[in-house]
Image 1 (cartoon, one colour):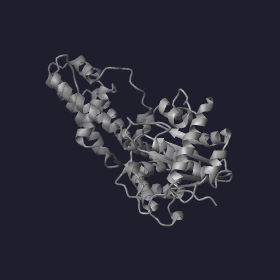
Image 2: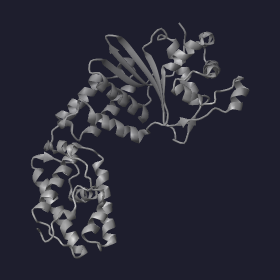
Image 3: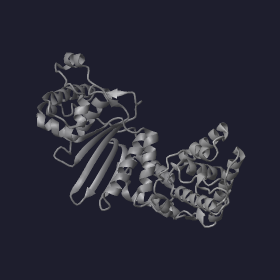
Image 4: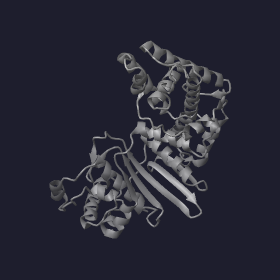
Length: 412
């Protein structure tokens, strides 16, 4: 039996955050792709991330290397992270899985693709690299230039021999030397290359969104997306330290349990179903911003005061990006309250000075607070403090859902 280099992390090591996030992302993605198959994943077990999917058709295996680098970094075929990954993948490919067509690989990195140094490449390998960056050709699975496979073979064999020169085994050196171009292409064709990818912060938000959009997510888990995500990452972290490799995997059923656990936790109130109505409200045709609307009813409004209002509206927009259903429901309720206030004559025109406009906006603030405060007896809202509600009113004006020039002159 051919012995290969042991590339597993030290048994006491903790998984890096990017690896755990990728494992979580891949599993959540798999959940929505198929509800029938049985699958499980681990971090730093064989590769940074491994994912096994078992079905009636057999077992599919996916192995991924994750490289978190500064976005300004670029990789070429000769970059150490790339060469090391190719050698590691090739060991798996030529090992027990070489007769299987159900194995695939992934290289995920925040770095970009760079171009090989032609002179250095020619001096070291005696080959002329293709005009296009080799990693771009591999990413596109473009093997039309025969030099692509030749260059990869040369770099791969050189790196493989270099790594195994320090080992008591020579691995699959003999087999690599005998591999045909079609065999090399088969191996390279199983690798998906992800460059310029999301960093940890963006990937975390993507996983949160996956949790929120999961078929297992419901009104009982509303607002608990981050809790579910954190517990999933902690589960990967905890199990990676187990000595028994069979216990290192996180299963589909484990994720389902996390959703059920979150759903069973007591809530102070129900989720307001008004969020569904908010999503159905058409975008306004009015394209004016907050400043233009206020100046339409009172052209001499204090510019400094207008800037303050605009900033408060902007902060509310950032809070809305959190995307909780309860936030959308609250915005819907505030919109209805403001429309009712404008329509029932609580605000009257004309506005003859800045204080008149401020007084009108204050009326909208108060009706929004009263509306949400009354509904809190039955429903649970996130981000419903008075300042946030005032910001929602201003943002509804800024985004053209409401406007003071909707108020009839003289209250008529």
